[in-house]
Image (cartoon, rainbow, N blue to C red; front, side, top):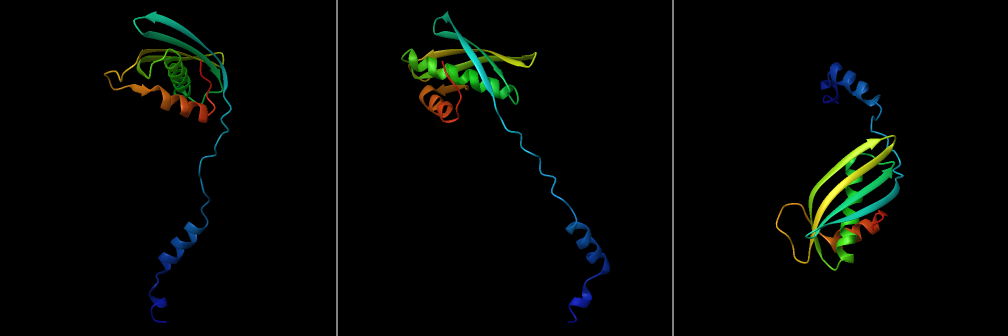
Length: 133
């Protein structure tokens, strides 16, 4: 009983204030992208350009991911296993996101930091419902 008397009035006041707090967790917005197609342009020497369009992207990363999925599938179609990302430009105009990505494709793992294993990426894209070439 003596222990209960040691609780300070300030501690009780703080405990009461904290118990009235509401959670301020961010609300999640449902992601419903509309993929509007991929244009593929072979630039020569295993260099490929992918032009993608979509509506409903959350950010630039969604557009880049769509282009990466197209690159992975195209790489497999050409009989190669790997690609290396060179650049992706993303633009939003009139509610339509556009991506302009360039990749090299190759049968062996290319040098560089931004390489992808086409089979792994294509499987992940299929699992996540991202269309490919």
